Length: 281
Image 1 (cartoon, rainbow, N blue to C red):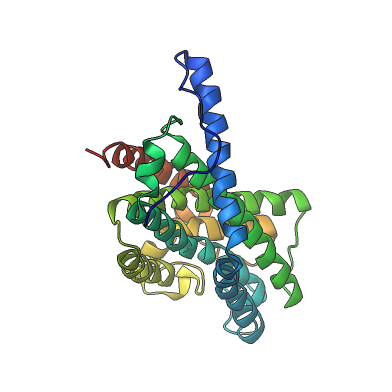
Image 2: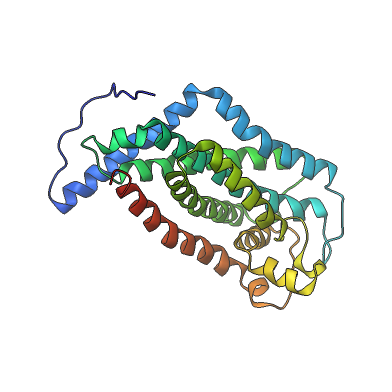
């Protein structure tokens, strides 16, 4: 597919550090607008992207909302839905990886690399656009959750902090998706890799079942799962029934909810940048 650029031609990149930083920010914002404009021009992608998460909330929240018991008491619906919110952020990784892989496959990435724009703009623009889309998605999910009877019990400030932690995990997973999309430059192959890998990560977590109800070793794995950390922290901040326990992960969910995404960003962001720099070599 031939890629053309119909926008204004950017001036040469500046040489001073401050000017380069300003230019990188400006180019990153331009790329963000480009990705968001693409979503607006393809409304069918919005329908496909949002239909599955909304179905998760409505089905799990309404149909299974009065399901199994929760350790320590409390309703299963309020235990479950924060986990569903986090789970949809994990599966959003597939959308990021597929989109990046598609751009690389069609030559869009090479086209932008040949233009006088900051080298970081394509990656930062993608991560910012996906974060904004995740915010819209999470807002929709919370609204659907309220419709089926879920609610937060603590202050609005704590609820916003819970949302922030969920988006922080999504931001980290975005960099995992960017790296995967640059490595596997076949959109069909990306889906084959992401979803089979995401399923066991979800299954061996506290999204649906408290680790206390799992076999000993499996419960330990579940407690240290990065997904479980964000789920446990968001439940605590929302004031929803939690899992409790005497283990270190159960006692420090907020710390892990910040630390795990930080580790993922520190690992995969440099890998993605390095891979992006080597694409044309």
